[in-house]
Length: 151
Image 1 (cartoon, helix red, strand yellow):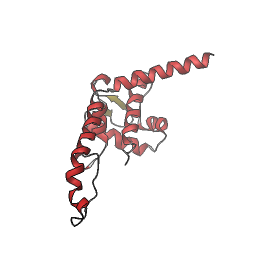
Image 2: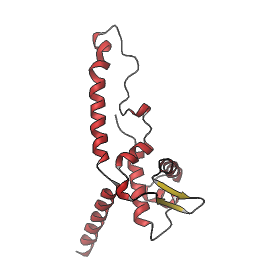
Image 3: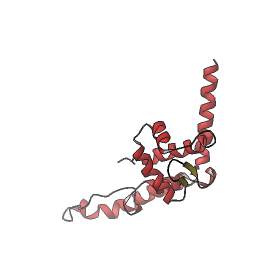
Image 4: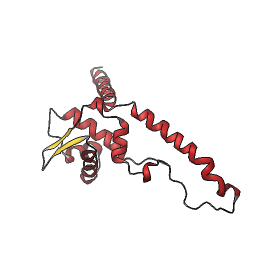
């Protein structure tokens, strides 16, 4: 099981929006070149992020900007905006366990609570991490690169 790349792409896009907002127009084409994906993918993500109130997008080629401070946007906010998990459940359970099998008959009772606990732990941790945290780490990484270039 793997979460789709929409979440990591969305975080990448939001970091670019914030980092480049004062130096260039942050368009879907520019963002697509940074992520190295088709601009259509970026446009869909931008629509989802806009619907969630995370960004604002100017019509035409006006570019994107954060609708809130980076410190007010949690990774959980981003995850919920772009990941389309059925009913909000991270784990998809197989549809028809065999009720005639003792394991199949009981697997939901045994596993559902554990899966909900795992998802809750992940969401609680994501709730504590903000876009500002990722932005600060990105800036530190860029400073480290600049130091290496000087050597």
